[in-house]
Structure formats: C-alpha cells, structure tokens
Length: 124
Image 1 (cartoon, one colour):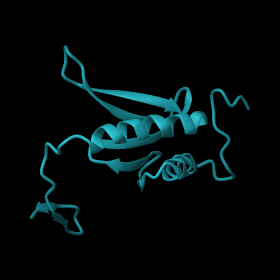
Image 2: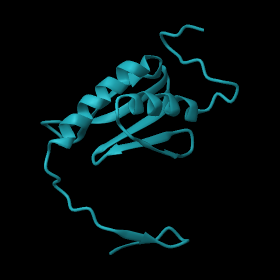
Image 3: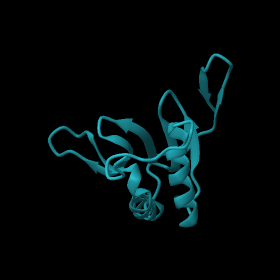
Image 4: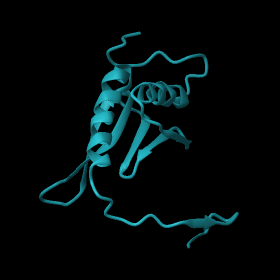
C-alpha cells in the first residue's frame, strides 16, 4: 500500500479511525474536538466556524475544513484539505486556524436550542 495516497486503517477500515487519529493529534496540541459520525463521514467539531470533515475521496482519505475566506467572485466558502496520511501536518494547520478564530470576536450569538424526537429544533 502506498502511504502517499492512502491511510492504513485497522481491521474495520472505518472513517472513524481516520477521525480518531486527527482528534488525538489535536488533543496533543491542546485542542479538544468532538466527533459526530454520519454516513461515511465523521465531522470533528473544533470551534465556531471550524468543523473538520474526515472523508474518503477519489484520491483517498482526507481532512477538509473552511479557511475563513470567501471567493471574490461568488462569495462561496473556500475550503482547504490535507491527506489523512499527513495527520500531523493537518493537525498543525487546523491548530493555526483555531488560533486565528480564538482571537476573533464572535459574529453570531450562540443560542440555546432544544430538539424533539422528530429532529425539529426550537431556538430558546
């Protein structure tokens, strides 16, 4: 297996293993992240406006997150990514973004919300 294009996963070969490697690296840097698993993807919630997607693409497993920039022409979010085989590099890049965000004033108020069993949410 070529580690330049893929990650060696354990027996389950699950995306959760890829996410856990990044979560552990972030923790070593003093950053706590919460994992939220979906269908073939795990989201690591790091900070407001910093959610890391751990997913498999055509070129293997990777991590993807918003850079904080918007495209000039379209106004769309610009994302960056890092291959999962470079988990330490990804963790350091995410830590840099985390540090940027920690120094910015919050632009949105955080509101408490409750959800019922039907996934309907109400803001409180």
